Image 1 (tube, rainbow, N blue to C red):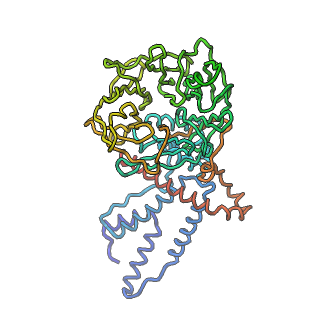
Image 2: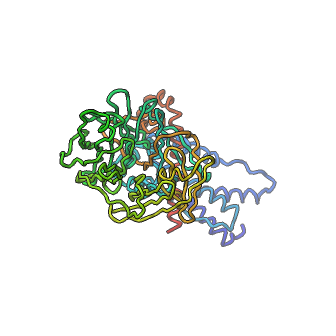
Length: 528
């Protein structure tokens, strides 16, 4: 027998450490080839044994009811390891690196990966296994996921920022960015409460939309999270007048609870005889309304069609001062439950405030003069204003004077390239690049008309006690109970057979997750 070269010995030793049976097969093949080169090698019993092992692995992969997701990752790593060994046998120049087949991804890394995923995906992942269901419904995880989403909110439509279009007596639309330039796709949300009924979106906070629906009676006040497809009906305060009310929602950090605030309505002031303005607050944990002292009620009335702006621990509305006939900015502090008027941006040309709203963690104000120009100002402390947009070059629209819409422009969020997505209220969308003062039209596929535009941040935040799930949530998996364990499945084979489609779906989902986790860990190792 000839002496084996040094290089071949190293490869054989490495292959033996990784899979000794592979070396055995190679040695036996070499012996057979020396004895009779013309003889065709017959399949070895070892090959049949490997086929049986592969069948057992496939059978284990189908057992998804109690399997740890890390196990799927290990299987994929073993498959990659075996493939690398065969590749190394064919190409001698390729280096073979031994791997640990029992590698488990630490729980903290899994948690860090999951909190970077969209809320809608995480809702589906709850049915992967019981540990993941416990993790994804844990308040600590929901808070960390929300904090990350808050930091990215309104920075890019490709991340966690979603645009809601409210239509009169029609369903809500949710838009997402597409790969095509300046094109967004709209799709209906499965929220049957608003079908064929008038409604308004009154505000938004941390993924929770506050809506008032005119059901023909006293009206419904609803908190709805489109990401997890859950909604909750709130009790109506005394004398509630449906969609004509002025409502807002915000988060009180001191109490770690969300507050729904009812403020005096200008419509009710003009149309309801004997209307008495008052301010009432409902905390979601308590689910009861309470009135703040009359001396703290402001002498202003809010238009019911205006949405509340929630930013930096306060709710803001644009109201009219009837003494000066000018608009002022009214702030309600969610912790102190006090009102105060915010001084507007500096103005030397008697511009009027056409709109207020949030842009990331800034309060923004649109200053405009009709048929003239538009200025967008922003503040973080309610005192120091910074002008972020100035333009008098409006896009041309056939058959229409572009200056006529100057008071209808609303900045919504930033795009991936740093431009600002703006709305011409209820009609169309534009992007504005302040670096070169250029507008571009944005197409909304699947939306012909709408009444309101609302940006919301995807989150796992639940509306609280007494929530309802939409039909979409029940059919997509967010409302699916965890599958039974092995012992129960064996006792009821008929039920397991009836759930085969669900099992296949979950197996596919696990493989997808395993690949995602494995790729992420590999990327971290490469960067390290």
